Image 1 (cartoon, rainbow, N blue to C red):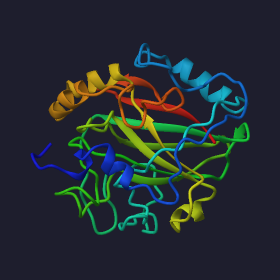
Image 2: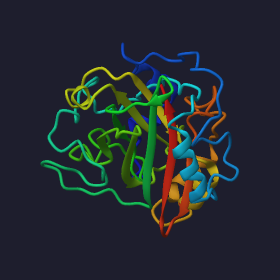
Image 3: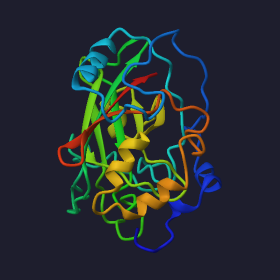
Image 4: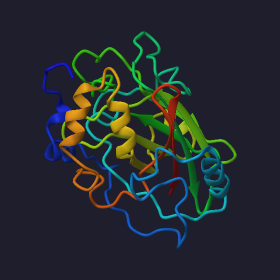
Length: 269
């Protein structure tokens, strides 16, 4: 990180202060008893899951009725118009590859390649036609549009419409671990693409967590030095968002720093 003290280092009180009328925490109740698909209850084995396991999870997700993923804060950097900057209404926001800025911006985020693949379901079936807006920090722990030095950028933000199987895929880079938070990605689910691109009301705002063993491996590569220290100072069980349970939010991750990683998660509404 660059030595300044960005807003994302201000801790729990600051993040909670960013909640608005759309951010309702701790919705309870699932859609019934089921096997969680595409998630892991801990970091053990997450980095070595086979492609066959991922395929099986994706196939089963069409009929699985998993526990609902909880609502979480969007944090201080949503870029969805709720606290100022609004990227959702900009031409170019609907895209798969979110590594580069678009429109008048031209920067590209650097880091270990990462694919985030989400399968969204509602009422125990694929949420066809829903839209997902996903965003996260860069390798230095900075958020485009907000953090010092990248306020003129809009990289690592994008919207995708779910296909017939409820799937969306984003090509990105592995995010940093910044002070006070476990490595994560934010996303909002909207009922339709048009609702997302007019910055309407999402039906779910939540976060995805990354397994520790994968983070350890990624942060040993060039450019992630600060993340090693920040990761060591927190844990999933102490993180302000994931401390109350993260079984439905911990992605299954496969790959290597050289070939890139794929993070998969079943998202049940």
